[in-house]
Length: 143
Image (cartoon, rainbow, N blue to C red):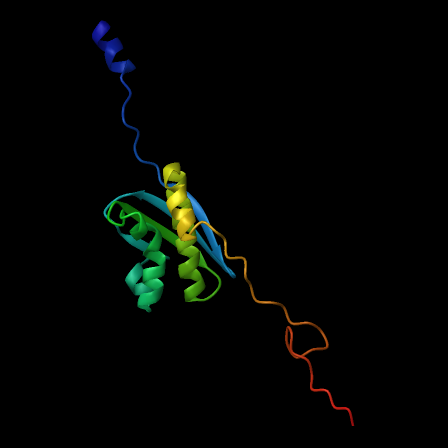
């Protein structure tokens, strides 16, 4: 009976649940699930290299993991919508940084210094009525 009690009292390692976070940039929204793995990144059902054609966008999406030198320790599943490819890559970087923070709060200082936790709030300004654009005015003619 004591052996059974010992078995019950010893804690078992819980299976690693995925950590979730949301990243945003302009109109792009990235939903990120982070789980222990071998470094595979899947975006909207496609590998990262197939989804982002530009090497710059791929590099931006990986920056948070590479900064902490853990790009081969986690798998990333991302769903991105809205915006263009550049904004989607930056939204992924923001979301991955936030998911890494949920997993381990000790990383906050490093990610904050790199600027990956800051939401870039710049968006396109709306067109105003009676004008050709957001700031542009029709040409003025005195005579």
